[in-house]
Amino acid sequence: MKKTAGFTLIEVLIVVSIVAILAAIAIPAYQDSITKGRRTDAASALQGLAQAMERWYTEKGTYVGAAGTGGVPSIFPSKSPIDGSATYYTLTISAAAANSYTLTATATGAQAGNGNLTLSSTGARTWDRNNDGAISTTTGSSENCWETSC
Image (cartoon, rainbow, N blue to C red; front, side):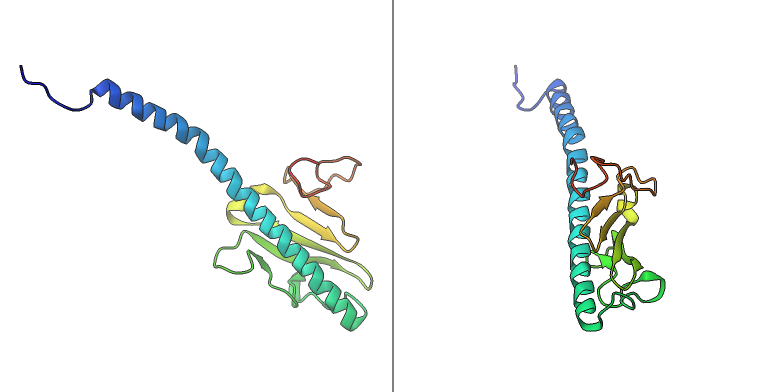
């Protein structure tokens, strides 16, 4: 009798099924990590825009005029990530008065279902987690911070 070297069909099927199970676990975890990274980048961009707003206020004595047409910042990039070709968040100055402002990072593209981030001149941070267009302002609400759990 001649012996042949190789794998049996059962062995190959077992390996393929193990790889499929590992991929079913790893791919969603990877995608969640990418989503969190993009949201963190948008939060950093909002903080950079807030610093630009403070520089504007120092020079002009008011926050009025920092936004161009449609609330698009005229003093800072209007997208996140700031560099690169892809845009996952659009930055806007949603309200600017003489002594206060509200900044918004609106999720777009692949991030669209992840909710919008806001930052006010008082330092209040909100994240519309359920993407319903309204921020819950109750004390202890999970939408009153940028973290996954508050």
